[in-house]
Amino acid sequence: MLADIQLQSDLVNKLKSVTNVPPGQLAITAKDGIVTLAGRVESQREKWSVVHAAERVAGVRAIVSDLHVALCSDEEIARGILHALNRDLLLSKQAVKVHVRHGWVTLRGTVNRIQQRAALEEAVRNLQGVRGLTSRVTVKPAVRSDKPVAIEK
Image 1 (cartoon, rainbow, N blue to C red):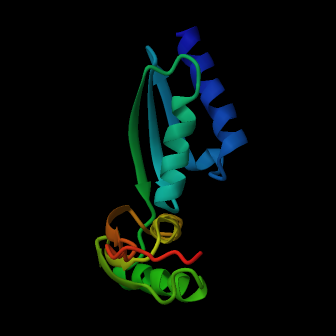
Image 2: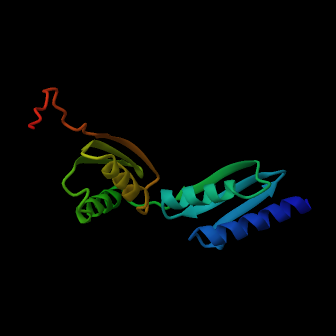
Image 3: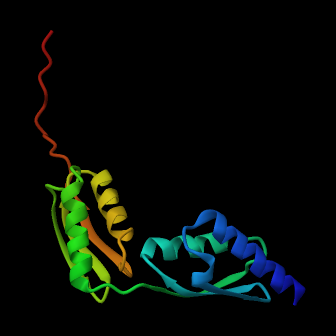
């Protein structure tokens, strides 16, 4: 019992130091090394940060995540994604289609560089209301020529 209380306290302290989620927003229980996280977070990124912070607490053997991402309408999420794409010069000209259903975002299309795909996925994960992300974005391979190159001397 005392170990469970200490584990719960350690977890609360860890979450205070590494996440922006107010401690009162979450319900945290611990029993025999099993931690249950419950409550509402604003984005998939916040949910991810809470779970991964819990993974780094000594004594945590298993995590039960009952965290729910705050709901936004699918249209609000889609508008947020398009706004983020338009404001990022790296992403604004890319051929990417966005599909949102019940807060789950699917991205399809092609980008020129792997950094663009990573930036796109990061931008979507950070938006309020996004419950999950499926990325079907591919990186267009660089054009290669099989013709020999003449070198002048």
